[in-house]
Each structure stands twice: as C-alpha cells, then as structure tokens.
Length: 223
Image 1 (cartoon, rainbow, N blue to C red):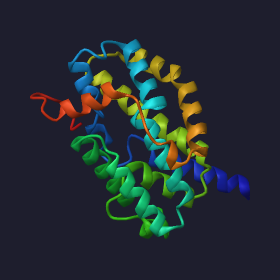
Image 2 (cartoon, one colour; image 1 turned 45 degrees about the vertical axis):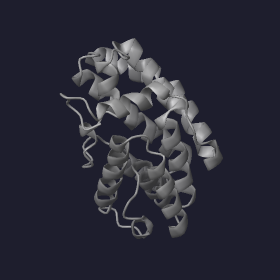
Image 3 (spheres, rainbow, N blue to C red; image 1 turned 180 degrees about the vertical axis):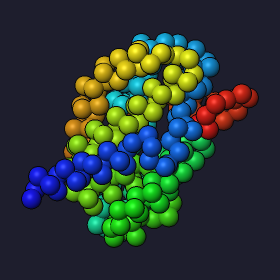
C-alpha cells in the first residue's frame, strides 16, 4: 500500500512541475534575459555558474527555504499566510514579485484538479514556492524530494530560456543540467532542514539584472 501511495505522490509531483502544467512559467526568465543582454552570461559555462550561484546564494536558495517552511506549515492556515507574506516581501524587484505571485496563483488553480483542503488554506496572494511546498506536503511528498524536483524544474526553465536567448544550444543545455545535479541535491537537502533564519543571499548581480530588466526596451520575457 505504501508503495502505491509513494508512486501516486511521485506522479503528482511530476505533473505539477512539468513544463505542460498550466502556470505560464515559460514567460519568465528571472532576470536572465538582462544578464545575457549585459554580457554577464555569454555561454553555457557562464549559464551553469549563474544558476549554481542562484541555487547556493540567490533567489533559488530563498525560494527553497520558503518552500520548506510552507511544507512544514501546510496544515496551518495562519502559518501559510505569514510565510506567503514574507515570500512576497522578499521579492527583490517588481518583476520578481509579479513572477512569483502569478505563478503561485496559477499553480493553486491548476492543482485544484487534485482536490485537497490545503488549497483552501492557501492565501489568495501566494508566492510560487509556498504554493508548491504546501501542496506537496498535503499529498505526502517528502520535503527533500519535493525540493529537488522544484529546483530542477526552476533550473530547467532557465536553461530553456537561455536556449531561446541564444546563449546555449540544446546539447549544451542538457550538459548544464547534468552539471547542476550536485548543487540541486545539496541545496534541497540543506533547505529541507533550514529555518527562516537562514533566508538571505549574496547574488547581487542577479538582483540588479532583475531590476534592470524592468526598463529593457526589447525583450522576450516578462522578467
């Protein structure tokens, strides 16, 4: 019986983090477009370094900590509200705020295909990692596994954006993903045990790129 439950949880996690899940993630680059424009990311090697920094020291680390907190508080409506408000307050730019809020709301709507009381506990204004973390917990997905899948999906989306921006070809993009396996596992394991006291980052160039993207004249992505 437990094997069936685990398999069902895995299938749901795969569906929620699939590129086909209707949240519109393909429209966002998280500031990567500006980083490419400014020459901060020029090739696949630079892309790998950029994403590794985000995982260990930037927005993806903070998202992972918020995800873990939402996972722990999935049964606590007031706790989820507090976590969501903190996540939105930590958004470093208007575009980052719009991105995480739009994805979070879209995820909650799409996840209603799997009815669960946790969806009623989520606040209307919910950041993406908070929504996914709470729903994953409610459906019995272990935190480290859920986080690894979430971070892999986020990195995959960035690689896809980089391909569209001409920074990397598909073969090199796959190689970047392979090279990021260790940082993804490390970050997911650390964040699954982290508290909100460990929020914070040092990826200053990435935050500046996100801010500068707001005024970029010609662009493919919304962030």
